[in-house]
Image (cartoon, rainbow, N blue to C red; front, side):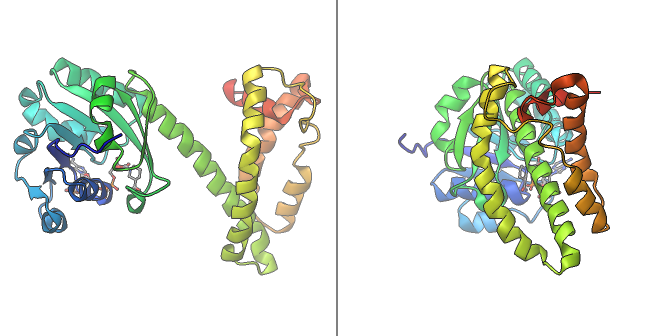
Length: 290
Ligand code: FVH
């Protein structure tokens, strides 16, 4: 897709992420207005070529208004006083919000006559515009398509549909996987620490192991999507008992909480008579809370 830097943009919120997003826009040649509640944060961006505006109303003059604020409440706090100026405007909200909050913001914007695209940023500020950064969108397809080249400046753009809550749902689902992986790493690091292994040493080996294990995800997903957990070739739930792992953690004098969680998911399926079925069946424990 060819770059279109003709759109005039504004960025509301110059925290770490808002600053990174605005910098990428300025560097790509977009006329970029920036606004922040607390004065002073715009200076580095102005030195780079952005224009600092004193009021949110001025920021709304842009073709595309980007909101990168703390949370859903701060988006409303910033935009409510200028709500009467939102008609005909395009709002891209990349503030982290829950799916329901995203839907509420989309309905609120629609009621004011504004086009709304919701974004979930799968990156830290230093990654913006670099390989590995991706941003998930849902809401107005027209906004996504019209401004795709602008959005692509921040990372790989993915669109999930008109339901404004979907990008957030996907974002939070991915974060769930990330947090559980980090907790798993912390558990392993705590386990080997009494043996004199530093977290740094363990991180190297963990990164290689976990990367290799991501190759298993597609097969796991195929079983889940097929809905038949008896498919040959899977590791059975009974074989997946974590008793040895839990005993080893206890022997090291550490908490077993992160691994207890997985053991409980396995055990509930075994107790329900599915012990010979594949590990993928733990998703049934998650879908159907105890
Ligand atoms: N930073 C990250 O790694 C993550 C990556 C994933 C996505 N998140 C989300 O991005 C939103 C902004 O995050 P941030 O890193 O820029 O956050 P801060 O540096 O804390 O800046 C927050 C900005 O929001 C302004 N703000 C807060 N409350 C209000 C309010 N009531 N009215 C107006 N502005 C408000 C704050 O202004 P100030 O404190 O400087 O005056 C900052 O500009 C966020 O949703 C992450 O979850 C980032």
